Length: 162
Ligand SMILES: C[S@@+](CC[C@H](N)C(=O)[O-])C[C@H]1O[C@@H](n2cnc3c(N)ncnc32)[C@H](O)[C@@H]1O
Image 1: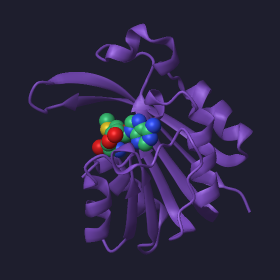
Image 2: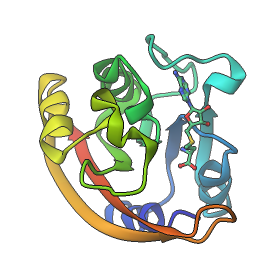
Image 3: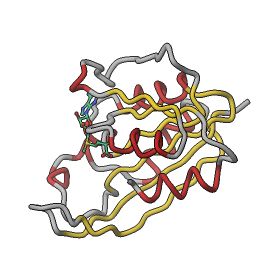
C-alpha cells in the first residue's frame, strides 16, 4: 500500500470511513483501505470516468478523497479539485500526490502543463475553498521493474470547510 496514505489515515481518522479514489489505476489503494475497514470506491478513465469533467458519486459523501499521480495528466486540473470538494463531507480530507516540478526522472519535464509545484496546487485548492492546506516534498525510490530510480514527490492535503 501507499505508505503515506496509511500514515495519513492513521493520524487523521479515529475510525475507518468512506474513501473515493480519483484515477484509481489498479485499485490497489482502494483495496488496501478496504482491508483496513474502509468503504471504498475508485474511478478511472479505464472504466469510462473522465476526470476532465465533473463526477459525482451516488455513494458519497466521503470522509476522504485521494487522487494520486493523475492531476499532472489532466488539462482541467481545477475540475479534479472541484470534483474532490463536491464528493467530500464537511471537514473531509483531500489527499493528493504527484511528481514535484523538481523531479528529475519524468517525461513531463519537457511538458510545462504537467509540471506542478506546491504553489500551483495550493492556488487551485484555495480557488475551490479548501482550508488547512499543507504540502510536503520528499524523495521516493521506485523499485518497480523498468523503473528503479528516484522521484521527487509532492504531497498536498486539504480539508473541506464547514
Ligand atoms: C499513474 S496511474 C496512478 C494510479 C493510482 N492512483 C496510484 O497511485 O497507483 C494514473 C491513473 O490515472 C488515470 N487517468 C489518466 N487520465 C485520466 C482521466 N482523464 N480521467 C480519469 N482517470 C485518468 C489512468 O488511467 C491511470 O490509471
